[in-house]
Image (cartoon, rainbow, N blue to C red; front, top):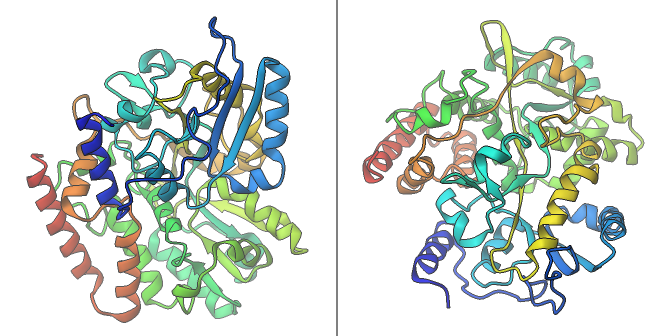
Length: 443
């Protein structure tokens, strides 16, 4: 049985995400393996690694990683890599048991104060920050529980050929210029949409969070939001983000029927120019380029532009870690699990292959991002002040908005399509809920 504290947090976590099952499949568990690490801490035995990258499992990439890892650590008998579809939902359910692998990507819904209940500390945050970037998100009370596998920069993915054929040769510098450019693309004629929302695969709407901080060039934008009752205004980070999404939909600049969007299909569509633009992190660049090439199009057509807002004449881009690898606190082979994480970050070449930034402080910038990096100033969002690590999440949950859940942006799209609510009415409603959430959370 779980300790009462952990059981309570698990129940809250499940309720917040509408996952009610309290049992889960036990395959690939933390440590149902008989082989354990050697007594001296030498990596040995077997571990199970859970990954959201089902594509890299299917194409054999992880087979190569396992082969190289075992070559370095010959006493390791097996690394079982399990690709998990619907990663967030599936893993959150499995975390109601002890059986959630040895190494896994920490689900985004795990709040900072929950980290010690589910994950093994990897070291003191102050020491780890000398070697790694972007570990704030998965640290709590001076301990770090996860290390990013790759760093992403936030911008807008686009088909360069389509934009150029519409006569757009300069990056938009305001949301209105962005909308005007999308209108020019629509006027030129495009098969599917100037901007594709991926509404049906709703997780993609979370990618709009990449505007936070870039809009105001403020690394404390999220922290300051906890001190405001009205964070949705025309010129605020959330206001510019959600307002641009609303306007694009209301003006008919997105797909005709968002309920029929197709994430996998969208890769080919933007590759061949049937879609002009998608709001995605830099992690998507290699996927779209590969899809373009597979469809007989030019992978060089896939480009990456800054968030369409300038502050003092400059674009800004938020850089941060992707999923963080952590160790199941129940693992019976923590030494080998830690060896896998360290090897993956230092020696696998994953971040470079995925056209991402290395989580290592001294890591190189991949060639595909070099020109983008010349156009922007990078921002790394500041961590919450000590003692307030979970304040944003507490307010967010208490408000009922839950910005980490795509449902609230799905509603924005629905309202923009139907005209049921104006943008101003939506902002008023969000601000009222946020103010109530602040009061309930004691902010």
